[in-house]
Length: 391
Image (tube, rainbow, N blue to C red):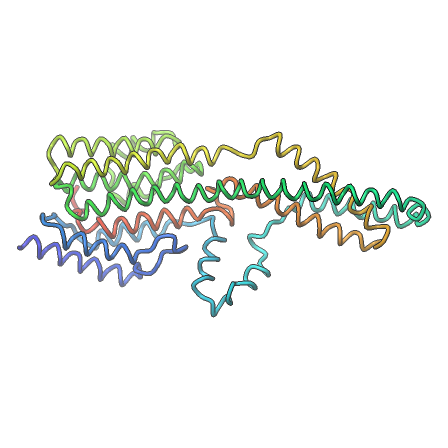
């Protein structure tokens, strides 16, 4: 009874602290919400029949606060749209003005656009200075326009196909991160429910799961630092092993440490039901399978030959624009040609940006916010069941 009262008292104290910090509100991009985490905390601890040696909620508060202080970059476009969906009063229904008048996050292929603009000016100047030539070669220009119209249909179809393929990689990347989030949440909820008897073992399993999400994000971005390792209370030896491991191999190190901890828990009978260890192993397997899949998304661009062929026809197609429109529009051919060029070159720039979705660009996935949300939610679920003050 005393252990149960202590557990309930700590959960209530944790709830009070995180309410003061505002953690029950959706985190950032709202890709993960701490609201479900609170329900999982209360249900898991209410249904747990075994006592858990609970640590100070203030220590848990400090760990979560350290995670929230980490800087965020990338994915601002996703966050803006999600925020606009929730606040139609500020952004308007359908957030038309927010997107129509946006400057940041818009495709700006400046180098090819400026080059084409200079070419358009030169072509318009040369053709408008020769009105007689334009009149005598009207049939040639008409035939050229027919060819441009025919090629344009195929060109927009191929460009649309490339953009769709890039978005498929972007969306697949998001689904793969969903696998990581699911594995982390399932493990955290089982720890909160008392599936692991040993508090030290439960802490080890949770910490390496958290580090898996963090090091995976860092590996995809080529980032070396792991400041969260200090917040989690990682031992000096474990921290030395983690930091000496190459960045790309750290996620595999984390999965191996999780498997080692689960094996030790099984062999030492530090569980209430062996099937719980099996279920956590299944989640580790799913997360491990997601690692090479993310590497495939990150390192499989559009085939070189496809890009070369498509861009060659884009250049030829755009080169004919000033010639066609100068006969009827004169100098007006320059802005018209630039508008058409911006449409096709902008689509090309978008496809390039979103085909590698794990970076820090405006239109990438908001990985910093997503990983922070994962870790905070897992800590809110399982954190109260762990003694964070223990050495």
